[in-house]
Length: 113
Length: 114
Image 1 (cartoon, rainbow over the protein chains, first blue to last red):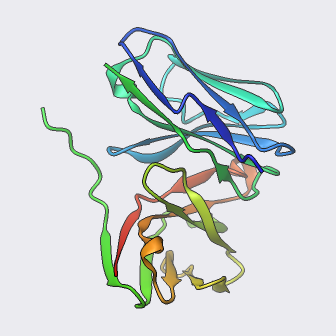
Image 2: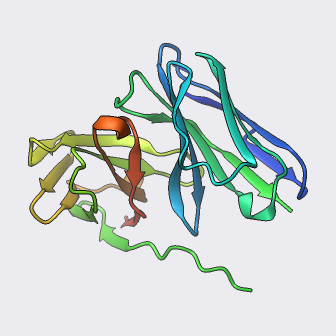
């Protein structure tokens, strides 16, 4: 199995630029989660989807962040405009059903200078 | 200025010893608990889970204990190996409108010395 696939693995961008992170969940999984991990705040849930519908986006830090899931096999997390404090590792995870075991991708390390 | 990060608890053991990693959770409504292992440069990996109607669950070399009275969770690793060195996170979840949503603890760094 390919597992959860995230791209890019590393992203370096300048403040003010738009950043798009991509995730392909495990085939057949109905729920998808976006997390952010920093030394300051640990691992935080940003948003999660069930059957492509956003269920809870209360963890999205501000309007600069948006996430979409146009189909069952693809999701994006966009930051526009990016700021240095957005620097973190962003993880995508998927589960077979809402409440099921979550499988994490390898993460995208974002650096905003 | 200098940034202040989380100061993760650390546990250092010798290969072959048993390890116990502890976690205190905050939400008395949580009914599902999971332990994850995260190696450097990788995403968290599921180890074992337990529901609130149980107080103990065993896996391969791992045991999770749940004490709902004091809201405490522990992970026991038997015969710890150097490959067990990682950061270990507990996570809690509940049903209702938050079904599927996990809240992660800060993590514990486990270092196993050969």
